[in-house]
Image (cartoon, rainbow, N blue to C red; front, side, top):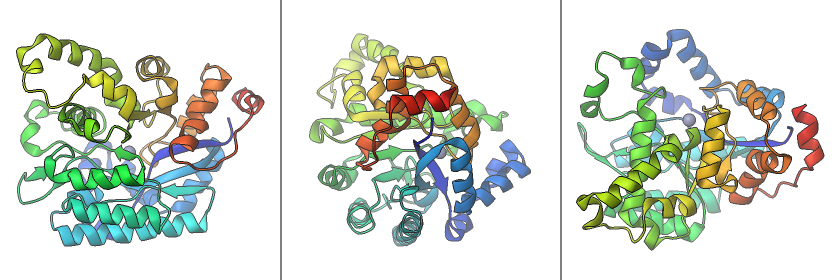
Amino acid sequence: MEGKVVLEEHFSTERNNALWNAKGEEDRNGVAYARDVERRLLDPDACLREMDRAGVEMCILSLTSPGVQGVVDPHEALALARASNDHAHALTRKHPGRFAAFAAVPMQEPQAAADELARAVGELGLKGALINGYSNVGPDEAVQYLDEDVVLPFWDRVAALNVPVYLHPREQLPSQQRAIRGYPELGGSAWCFAIETSTHAVRLMLSGLFDIYPGVQVILGHLGEGLPFMLPRLQHRLDEQREGRKGAKAAHRPSHYFARNFHITTSGHFHTKQLRQAIAQIGAERVLFSIDYPYEQMDVGGRWFDDLELEDGLKASIGRANANRLFSLGLPEISAGAVAGSAS
Ligand code: ZN
């Protein structure tokens, strides 16, 4: 299928790389993999070439994890976010119709994050925010999650701007990694990213945030970080447990918010049975094709999607139309014939 849109695709900058310690990636995945990823994060032309080969028309870029979320000093976090967003804007200007971008936001100061999001959306034309999980707000393990009261001014602006927020993984705090001691390969994308990010998403559902802002849309990658499978049991046990009923902050059960306030993408999880399970749980209109470049190869993800046996209408929705609608991209619809032709 030509004309696909993808939205969990990453870039970096020299400034961001200077702050990012890639040692963990090297230990887990090998030096060659980490070096190759680092090179491609800095090379938008390589991204465009892979997009062309994979039938991807548009790529919504974002600063790679942990990015701004890992910067403790709020002034430095704001400076990095602004520089990153200006860089992203330059890429979208240079390649209109091929690149769009999410804003990086300095959540260490939620009001500053709100103002930077407004600048990024209003002045730079960026399409929403991508946040790499919790934000470091002090030494050691002083961090802040997105459901905490102090973050409300940010959500207020998200609701007013009517743009989505992509909740992207980062590693768990060191104190929470006892369960994988001796198995460092589980610390990142293979396992713990999903644990960390799905827990963060559940916090949002239980917090009452979506009662205050019922229109806010959060995007989860990796087919929903396990939630399409786990959420029914979570809800069942919350219903049964005394702790689940008393003192609930949210007006509704988690599935209510999952069906109304979340979208999920296929990034880095190219598995057909799991895709069908995700569609059954959240609905095809809330599933969006993505790849997770450069941690994944565009042509591998593209080929999996093109070969999928889905009805043409569904494939066009997940591959393009859902993103077109969610981000108001203004792309023309593609015909069912074009979908079938390119998949054969
Ligand atoms: Zn990613």
